Length: 303
Image 1 (cartoon, rainbow, N blue to C red):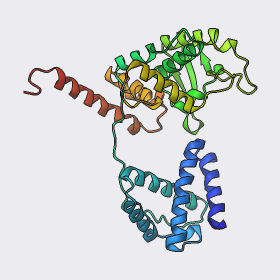
Image 2: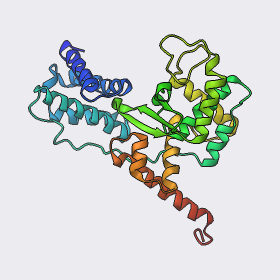
Image 3: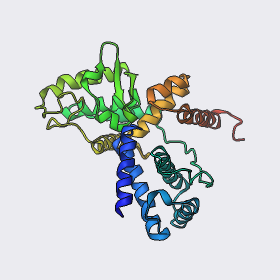
């Protein structure tokens, strides 16, 4: 990649971190999308200077993505990255107009996320072997995931100093370094207390991890992959055949709240969604749940 593009993308990365407050993972995703777009502009369109690509170049790239067989959701995500880059270029006065303005772009479909039933959740949490020290920790992890609806990155970065066990609250630093307060259920609080007393207190804690809530056997914070593995193993022991990730617990947390009548704004706040439209997908899940109930139990639903 030519130096013009490299230096511009470095500046764009700084903008995403400092101005937009995005997480490291989000920044990497934007950078990956933009590097692929820049490579295409260089190789296929001869665009060597970042502020000189035009609407026709973006349209060629969309056709290229279509030819590669990329799903519309993937195309829409990449175009969102390009749109963000164009906005950055205009803010820095490196572009006068938005070359995306007249482009017809694929729309993101609102795929309903997979959720677990309350019974599934109970089976998974109950499957943890509490006779083992790590089982005490793993149960606390699963209880907190479901009780608070956290993203996996938020879970692994939970800090003891942000826990209020008296009022059953936890302060979460979410996307964009935004703080929110989330209630912790009584069963999750109890599981945390047991973990702190019977597992964490026995560890030799590594320097820099003194405030990290969930630790591994060597006194260091857990990785996101470790959380995936803990959940996958628990689901297997519980005999749950569905494809499950920590985000499935987050979706289930929100869905179960909406099903039982929780205010959508409250759910939005607990999930840390910037826009209510993101949370509204759970009202669609609720409608699907209601329809399933009618189809399953109403005597004339399938006659």
